[in-house]
Image (cartoon, rainbow, N blue to C red; front, side, top):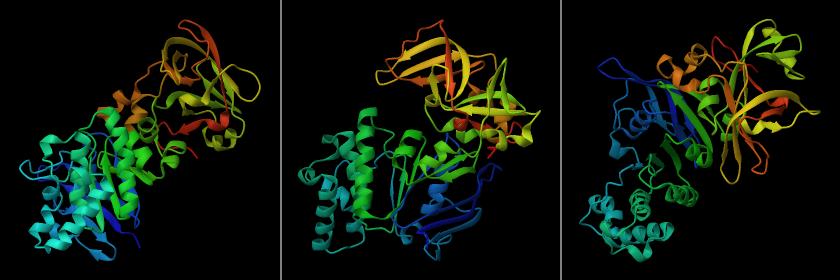
Length: 382
């Protein structure tokens, strides 16, 4: 049985805005699940409804086999870690961590035991007498987590807890959060807009957009088998290259170029003589033509050296996926932003590759690594 189960969870505000539309989601006991998506996608609304901080317009929230829709937040046995830490500046670290226990009239000996245990798990044992003003950002975040841990909840909820930290500290704290999660073992629902956080931390990841669940699966599933154009564009950096194409016999027509489909021919049989959107990840483009793949000629526009890899922005004469196709899953307002490239794409190459701007190059493409999407619905073609 799932520790958290959301069934057709819906939120409609008095203004008529539908922030969340029929969300179905389950979080297993001890599982770390991430809700990710752009601003306004409904992820924080969903988290607040699970916590009991937001009224439910429709659907059901269950903890185990218990429906908690009408149960107050303090009776739900959840602990929430917020973006802004919410520490009391006049209290010490120990007092901040144990604040909820003091309010609950937990006996002093038990309270001190829980505070010491949380501090040990979080590496705060030497800082218990300090005030928040004398802590770093990462230490304050650990105190906020400690305050949640001492309550020994069955469910942890985290709302963008790392967004106030600098980039280097965020990377360090990602592993710290996961270490604490494994030590505690409670089901965790974590909200972020950062896809890197989502992909590196989540056992499973739920991608939301416009209040609608786009795809729910492991990071590997989301990256390797995106359900639609929105997920394909949102997950991955650099993002997936998406081009308008057509299917002619056993070939994919990209502008003036033709690529042999190989095994993909069977998948695209219904699209013969029709348009399709073809996608390829930047790392699936290899420099040099020849055997082992189809050849794609391109003109290099910009070369970016990142040290560990080379990003090569190129142009071909096949247009990028039209905004109308992206609108099927992204919505009209953001379709133009998602389209991004107009007549080109990007390849991720070995940093030792001899490529320069203005050069004509040939990329080898394994047809088995191509992704295909319906231009009308935006759904993946399997």
